Length: 196
Image 1 (cartoon, rainbow, N blue to C red):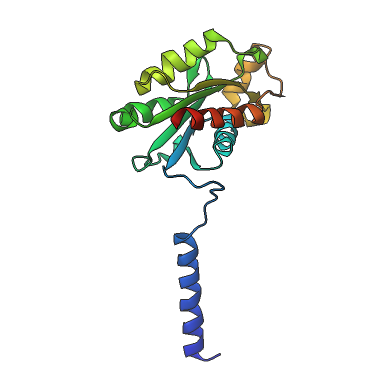
Image 2: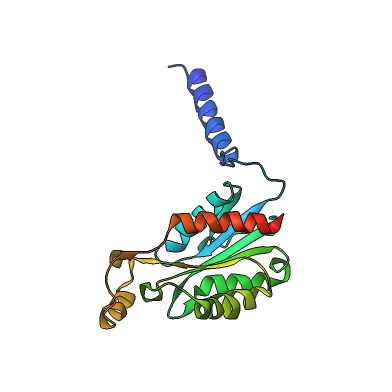
């Protein structure tokens, strides 16, 4: 192969690689005039799945972000925030993110949600007060936005050693899955309906 041909192929390959990265496709099944984001904090993935399903319920118009990525969300018009719960507390990185960004975040929050095991019992007003009202809403400085408590799931193989030992001592170390996609989809629709 001639040197000139090799150089052309190499440059073409680099161009394609850069173009693919710069022009990555995003799936927005329904167009939106506003930029939406769903931000979540999770230990084992339940809140990630809930966040994706909430976005799907909104017609897929929201980008979904893990708080561990420390995403820059200032450019978004509306934000939905959720967290998994451990030891009766929301994820510490969600708490930190909200505290560090509450100045601009407050006006953009359009929904709050939590995923918790709740001893596999249906959540009630006490869980809403504990996790939404007294933690997420209080941190964000928002009041009347749609909120939801979802039952979670546990996969023992995904727990850290210390967390698994605590669960075993409490007699709660069994796999279960009570997170329902339909509930998350419905919440996404509720958020959109309340924002119009």
